[in-house]
Length: 126
Image 1 (cartoon, rainbow, N blue to C red):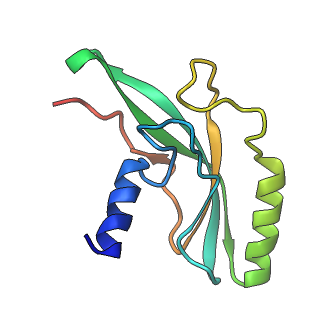
Image 2 (image 1 turned 180 degrees about the vertical axis):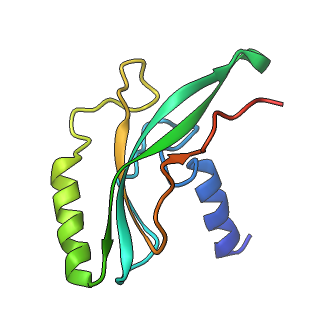
């Protein structure tokens, strides 16, 4: 397996750049797909939802965009990252696999604006 395939598999396993779907204890607070402006810096709130009773019950992770800013310069990007990291801390928040979960935050730096919801509709088990 080459490095690209390993990365693709890791991204699949971690549920689209979020919490690890199998271990449940590792959280990713920052996902940077780009390292230079212009870019979007977005805060995503994610949580685990119950999908349905089929095959013994299944869950999925849903992301909701909380805030997003467009940055023309690297300085603007750094300022947005600092502000978002201070405002949207996961300190004291339980894992999304916990029954006490109220969700967690993830900061993303991308070259396209993140969707309002991901997935856009509730998945259906086939």
